[in-house]
Length: 84
Image 1 (cartoon, rainbow, N blue to C red):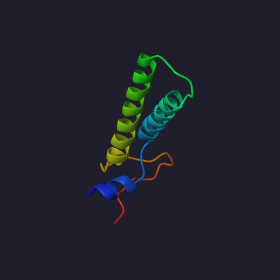
Image 2 (tube, rainbow, N blue to C red):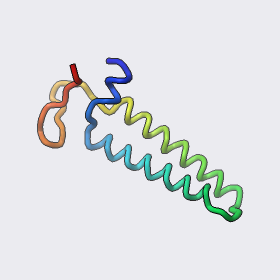
Image 3 (cartoon, helix red, strand yellow):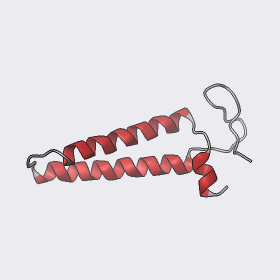
């Protein structure tokens, strides 16, 4: 399976939660970095690492979200399969 197909397939609930956590971390980091007044350097540094971790989580989830294994079912109970 190539990368574009993998990113276009449905994801399991676990991966959806991980993606949402990653989005939250990136949003939090952007909010901290974007504050208009001066913050201590360690706070900005932690925010930069949060943005990095969140972005990596999102990319990993999008790349591995489809587990094309027999028996893997979606939330509705239907079998998840890759698009033809």
